[in-house]
Image (cartoon, rainbow, N blue to C red; front, side, top):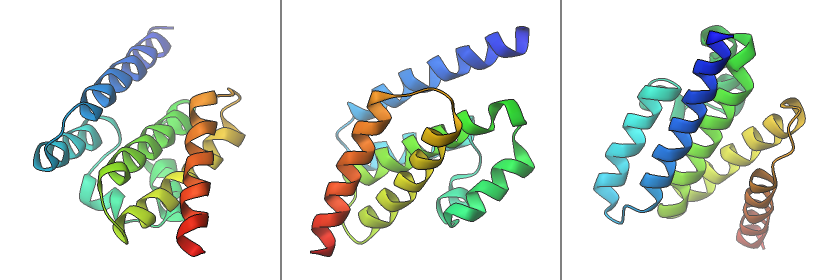
Length: 133
């Protein structure tokens, strides 16, 4: 029970930190905040950000408890999405693609339907679709 309460609190803290990040306008400051959020919630920024999605899944399986894995993958998807929002192509497209794949996995494995996640997935699909056209 304590571990579940702790993890719920961790989710709330992550959401608050992500909301603060979205209000920062200086890219250098955002980059520092993103790195810090990776370190606090999912792992090393340089390692995770540069992995392919299937490697991210393996990383999660090896490092995160099973009962927290899907939510931590959601954290990772949110971080990739947040960074993609202020980057330019081709990096933006790569980050959006990874975020979409992780959001899709979380959507099918979490047991919780999230309108916010679905909206982000639709936005990514539109953006990726228009970039390919």
